[in-house]
Picture 1 (cartoon, rainbow, N blue to C red):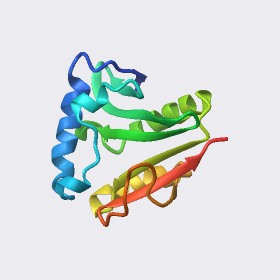
Picture 2 (tube, rainbow, N blue to C red):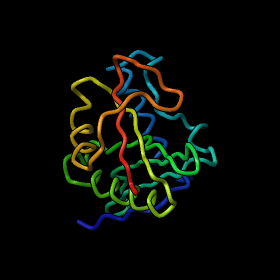
Picture 3 (tube, rainbow, N blue to C red):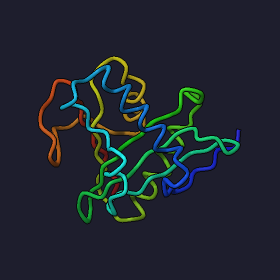
Length: 154
């Protein structure tokens, strides 16, 4: 299986479509005020870089890195297409993004994810990559529907 991971400018609409389905899915597990996924407009912010993982040209997964400060960033919008679940694609995508974060000089990458059992595969992935649970960061507040993680890079 040949996975191609590249920055994505969202122009072909595939990432937007995957993230829209992600938003709908998250609303099954969390109330609207606890869904922190980025919408289409937010994804175009200059502080955000989006990556897409493709297999034979088909979108398999996506994720974004949002700069929070000169030395911190947040992992956002990580989603794997249902067709490609449990194939190791998210792990490879995460490794690419963490390497880029280190290259950019970030010392810490944080993330917010859901607390429902449906998010367990994502939490397992993050913990396997040495993310540790932490307090809310940035503009986030304590929320029973959210869990927060961070990873020191340097």
